[in-house]
Image (cartoon, rainbow over all chains, first blue to last red; front, side, top):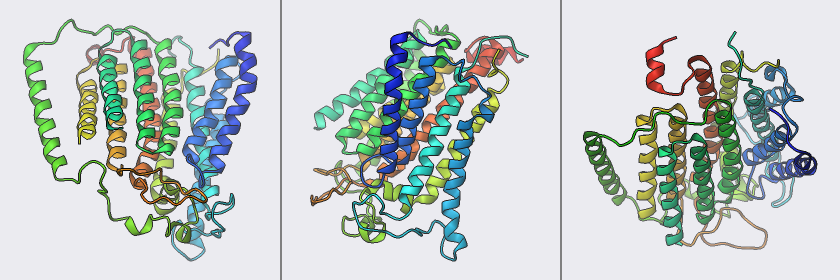
Length: 144
Length: 177
Length: 112
């Protein structure tokens, strides 16, 4: 897929960073404001998709199975399962909330909810980027 | 408020009719985007800001994927018939009428629109009980990640499996020249 | 009750698109419309008259909050819907590369 004109590339240079920062904000404040891991993760993925769309897919044409986004997505899924299994190993129930609750309305409160939001955001962002790389670097050609 | 809600849902119904009957596939994709953004506005009216945020970003990315697929293959639908046959219309109309009657009868035995219908989780989800059990200020995140965290683990697995399915299906074509 | 009836009618339109249409992209669009109708029904069930969003803000005491349980169900379902649509569209692209058409009747006749 070809890239776009110079105006689009220049605007994307600033906008992609702002969208990424907004996604990180929504993920981190998931237990205080609306949003959470899912919406913020999709927004982070959208920032990378914007970069690929504006600059053409020549730079992003890698094998999607070995790319770094696939690694981030796998670590996100694995990390969520690790958070669940910590409770089981340490003698209490599965999915036990093992971090302290803290005071209300602070950023570091609510048990393991911020950690779970971060790993789910990583997983969803990785999934979006992998799917888009696979669909965007598709070329109409002959079948082998 | 009820009039705006019904108006937006009627807009979604009209958009769905045109999206399924259009001859150009690009128009259908754009109309699907209109339906998605109207759904986000309906979520805002129903006081659900989490859902509105997630629906807007997901709808944008879904539109991008649809249009990328349509532009790479074909953009004309060659199977639009001129008019539908009469027995099909009669059967479809009878099915629609029966279905809506059954739905109306089932909804009559539920509490009316705007009254609480789910009462099992009442003691857990009050503003006094939540700081003691979870410590979060957002009810929806607390329910998704703490009270029903097992469902979120299942959802993470389904998302991972769907992405692995996409990688497995498009394996041979996605190669650079 | 009228919004719920309209949402069920939207579900019927999506069902028509999935069952009757012959183009693969139109089938995928019908499936998406059915998913949107389901989210709409779930969000409408959880609505309370005069309710506020289910988020606690420092310093404001609210009396009635909207039910957060159906919203939690819809939140994960939206992202799963995106993944399912992406999978369905990638299968459609693969079929187009192999058969050259999106028409379901033609694909059934060609058979590799």
